[in-house]
Image 1 (tube, one colour):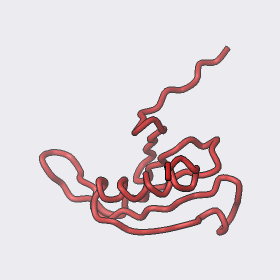
Image 2: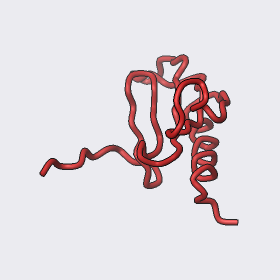
Image 3: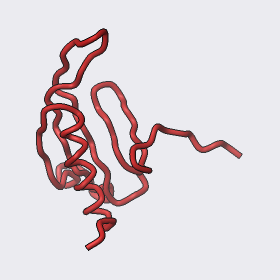
Image 4: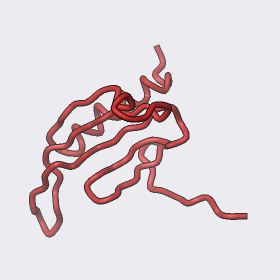
Length: 96
């Protein structure tokens, strides 16, 4: 039996980077987040992300209809703050 590939997780959900794109959430769920790093700046020997486009993706739709919400934030911390809220809200995981 093939082993399930292990990914880095953020708050219990997969966090996968591919080039300048980060996917947050389980691809088998109805929704996930796509973070597009649009620019970086060098700092202390590493590249620090600057402007990031955040997209809430509906995995059950295709084409242009799969993007539900978009926003832009400066820095990964600010982007993940809104991304996590959107994802939990879309999956119905936010308690009232």
